[in-house]
Length: 383
Image (tube, rainbow, N blue to C red; front, side, top):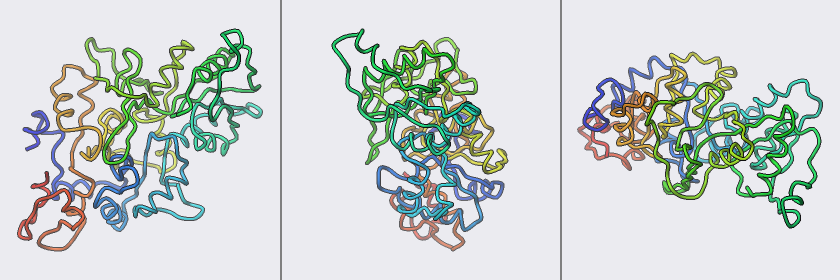
């Protein structure tokens, strides 16, 4: 079935049946999950996902959560995980399993700005991003709306600048404006000022599986951001199809790059830096780690780049048709964006984690499955 559905490669993008999942999990210590589109949609948990993660914890598996969303702090994500039934540490340890781009951007700036007295960052982003920076000793300026000052370019360029700004950080900013772009460029003209982007995603997940899609600048198609480690591709004719609609974070990063003639350091998936943040705190063995996500160009590419096993879940952005297109492409960069396995939902892991006989598909999995009590392999009948 994988060959027919996912493009003819028998060794990659195989449906993860209960038997395959049992074999896989026997060789795995750590599972890393994307959140939006994998564990939940908006404020609704994907049916069966909390039960699946609870079962994984009960089996002694270590869980981590990697998200490109920079609009929440670690603690806010930990609270949401708890609220939706995914468990995790509480109290002082809350958030230790979460690695968002706000937190990892703060770690990056702490590293790059070490030794500088009272450094500041001009933040085109959320209060949560600013809070994570301030937690590591980097003060933030610029959060919130900024009105044009004066009647023309001379007035705009005369607006005051904060002293000691050592970095411009671009995250998702609904208040992005021409004035903020102008200020960002002026800071970046100062010697030694860093340009950092939280991620290059151009689609924002919403509830009910809907998305805001963002067309970026020419050549800035979906997934074509530049992480800290080298990112493909320079292959002729290797372009990724952009989606139409309002802009996401990657488009804001592109605007600042274009205006400043600078290239941003990108923190989020598929950059290796965000995995290094997890690895340093978790002591991960890549060969015994799985990345579970819904996007080929971020989650799966991160896993492939870092030597992890990969599982694509079909509850979010990418589809089996996308996988097939990547497998059949002549572009080597696209060929990397193919998972080892796929599931209809994270809930498909449940049969491999339950010891009962007969039908191992719980009521939550029935949302995805057609099954009968006599069928011990309900995952083979998922739609």
